[in-house]
Amino acid sequence: MKSFFKKKEKQPLATKPKKTKVRTVGTRKKTVTILWILLIGSLAFGIYKNFTAIDQHTVHEREIIETRIIDTNAIESFTKNFVKDYYTWQNEKDSIEQRTEKINDYLTEDLQALSTDTVRDDIPTSSSVSNIDIWSVTPESDNTYVVVYSVDQKVTEDKDSQRIRSTYRILLHQDNAGNLVIIQNPTLWSIPNKSDYEPEQPDSNGTVDSDTVQEVTEFLETFFAFYPTATDKELAYYVKNNALPPINQEYIFSELVNPVFQKKENQIKVWATVKYLNERTKAIQISQYELYLEKDTNWMIVE
Image (cartoon, rainbow, N blue to C red):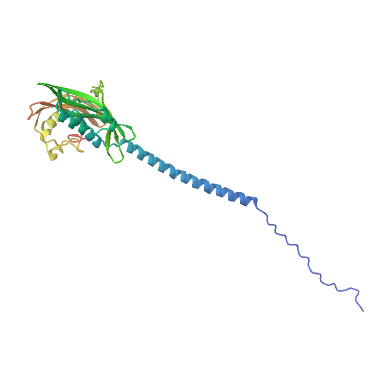
């Protein structure tokens, strides 16, 4: 008997469809890349500017130092030689011609022509130089300097002679090889005058008691009495840190003149005026000191 039921054939299981991978052109990846580039670029630029700034600062400081350091030895020597030749002559034709030849070694051609008749052939005087003072050497511009000097002359006419002191200003040029030439003739000038500046005078402000003042005064009188002839070893009992050097001179202590005392923390500051007699010249030597003293076991000059 045939079965009415047919054996069902196994149907293959339906497989789930695989998801298709979609490759996207990632805007996020580009953005990140751009940001990294900007970050690295900014960092590199910052480092570059930092090093550049340091280099420029260093060069700037070097330029300032170079403008302050001026070797005036050559300028001063050149000026002194010129002054001696310019203000020296005899009232003789040969001497005047020699002077003209000498000063031409210092002057530009224009100044040589200008200075031809400064000392005439018939001049009645003779002149010699006894002293030259250089007051200042000041940069005027690149390789050009202003020199102010004074000259002491002995001027003789017939049998009469007189001393003359005059001050002048000249302009010099120095080339890259160090050679010098005067480009402006001696021009009447003035020397610095006495300043009316008066420094403020210290006073004892009551910070040091009378007993301490007496102790320190006695210490200083004892010290300055033997100080002129004291050796290094002897000074070590009174002085620290090389505050005062040995002088090894024959001076006789006379007195301590109106010392001023002020307390500075654990130290005593003293303005001391010391009067000595110079054994050799027999003149009075007045020396002034600003000293700092400390007391451990004994008083010591520490600065």
